[in-house]
Length: 189
Image (cartoon, rainbow, N blue to C red; front, side):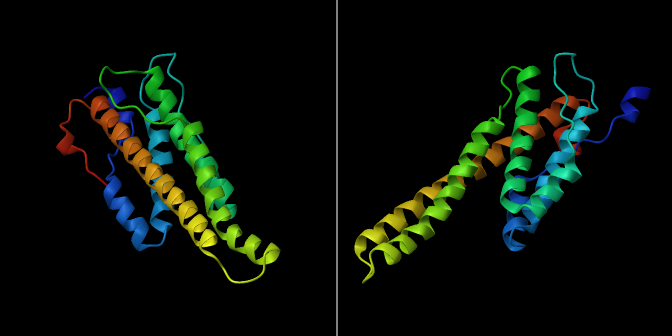
């Protein structure tokens, strides 16, 4: 093994489904850990040799996670934006024929903001109805709230799919960078 290879950090493949299950079981705490690990993975990826035109993936992982914990919606949005933006730029600048791509950070941020808006709008429909139009709740309120909830659920599923594709693209890049190993040699965590 050459000296340069020995100094490179180990790139880990991760199992999206395992982390999704842990996130559900721990009511989102596993999701924050997974986000931290993804940002750390990008920092490790940055230490591998790359052409001069390939951007760095460096970011302040700890600062982003603290921001996500201290300012939950805003911090989480920023951390997710960085996660997608950095890998998308890296893959676009260092393309491999037939390799997977990921959504841009802006696209993911837009969906997250719209999803948050739908959550707030769902609860506001009832409050607006009660404040401006007191009386029994009619079917319009129930239907409107249900439609807003369905749109929010669809957006959440889209975000899950984007995160799955992000992890698959990252895992593929790990396999390409460590091609002297077989994919089974790299643990899924």
